[in-house]
Structure formats: C-alpha cells, structure tokens
Amino acid sequence: MAGYSLIGSYSTVQVLSPTVVNPIEYCTVQTTPSGVIASIPVDETEFQVMGTGPILQAFSEAIETTMADSRVIAGVGSQTIDTNGLLADNVTFTVQYTSASTPASGVTAEAVVPVQLLNFSEEPRDQLNAPQVQAIIDGVYANLQNAAGD
Image (cartoon, rainbow, N blue to C red; front, top):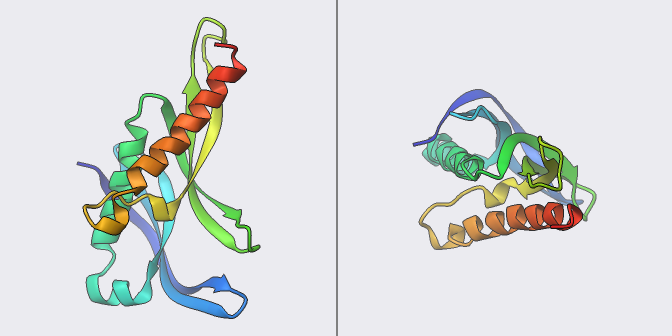
C-alpha cells in the first residue's frame, strides 16, 4: 500500500473564474515508496469535516499506482496555466521508451496529469479516473514509439 508524508500545507483560495474563488487547504506530500513530491488543493469544507487523510491517501495511492507502470520512470508535481489563464495543478510523469532504434537509455517525454484525475477510489465520480490517466500515459508512450520509428 502506498503511503505519504505531509510536507506542508496552508490555507488559501483557489481561483475558479474571474469572479469565483474556493477556500482550500493547499497540501504538499511526498509519496512512498517512489518519493514523488506533489501538491493538491483540498476543499476547505472537506478539510474541516474529514481532514486531509483520506484525500491525501487516495492522491498518493493514485500517484504510486501510476509510478508502478514500468514505462513511467519519474514523477513530480507541477503547475500549468489552463485554458482560462488560471493555475492548474498537475503531476508530470516521465515516460520512457526503449528499443533497438533508441539509445541504450531510451527516449523520454512528459505526461502531464491533472491532480483531479489522481483519485482512483470506488466512488462513481472517481471510477473513470484510472483509465483517463492510463490513456495519457499510453498516448505519450505511443508518440515516443512512433518518433523512434518502431
């Protein structure tokens, strides 16, 4: 079972649109055993009712499940700018492809996965997340394979 260490957290707001903000607890964890450091916003209401334990555990387990894919060699928390010009939290996984037509170390590319997909719980709202994350990894791997000419 995957685990995590809470590195830090603080209260802030998540800007959802020019006129809508959501109070959150912004948490940074380091997962075990792979050591990925990533951050996730936790809704303040959920934080007050449940704490961060279940959410951070599910987040860490999803990261570690993704890291268990033999094609994934690294992961790190990242932020990008979304289509609305707002910050979006992600975990960027490094995907590696190795074949006879690549250098011995293989070739790599980044698979950027939004943090909201990194929850593979049994709840109906989360059941489609694992296949979506897998599709992102598969797409990056296929691109590397095509670029290598295999």
